Amino acid sequence: MNYRHAFHAGNFADVVKHLILTRVLAYLALKPAAYRVLDTHSGVGLYDLRGEKASKTGEWEEGIKRLFDRPLEGEAGALAAPYLDIVRSFNPNGGLRYYPGSPFITRRMLREQDRLFALELHPRDVMALKENFAGDIQVRVTELDGWAALGTHLPPKEKRGLVLIDPPFEEPNEYPRMVSALEKAHKRFPNGVFALWYPIKDPRDAERFAADLKATGIPKILRTELTIRAASTPPRLHGTGMVIVNPPYTLEGELKVLFPALAGLLADEGRGRYRIDWLAGE
Image (cartoon, rainbow, N blue to C red; front, side):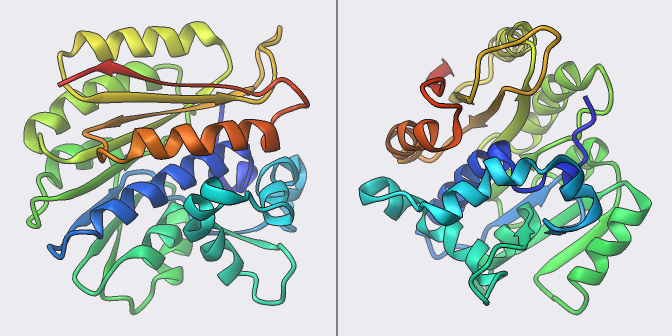
């Protein structure tokens, strides 16, 4: 599948992915020491949901629009609040038109001492990304293959931080590429937090990916998946997954609060399913 960010901005997968992102960043900010985020496939950073690409799919109406119109309540609502506040900040008139991608969500959560390295290879996208962050001394935008950067940009000088790997899945070998890239990156930055996003179309692909991750021997791998409908033939996107290596110790508990609420809100009625489990422990 081709998962160019602009066509799918704000869909259910983005909501889940970016909620996890905000929870990880909130944890990193608990310590005063600086951290760095390396975003390997950044996209353009900000998306017009009424624009040509997002309007073509309309996926945001079953994603961020549902959460925007019906915010979660109680403990789940409190955990989702930083993410939803960021989305609202880009829509100050109260309606929903603009959706921030991972670079802008990350930027809003950085403290003065923290940094974002945003990488993008698509020529038009990286140009837009540079314009979006022009003059921002805490963000460095580079036209670079994100896979290559996992060897050249790690470890960060801060010695702590997050590596977000969110490829467009334009190539058939993205799953094994992610596994191979993680192995190399983890050797360079073994104490870093790694978050790898993947789409769920054919459940067999996701299971093979999990098995390959287990086989690496890398410790502390948390798997999170949420599906909004049953698998179908031919396969279509019906779920979203993210594996987190070295997750914050608070994350599993937070997601066990968030995911049931999200499954009820984002899924086709009665069809939401989720799992949060460990592919590898200590």
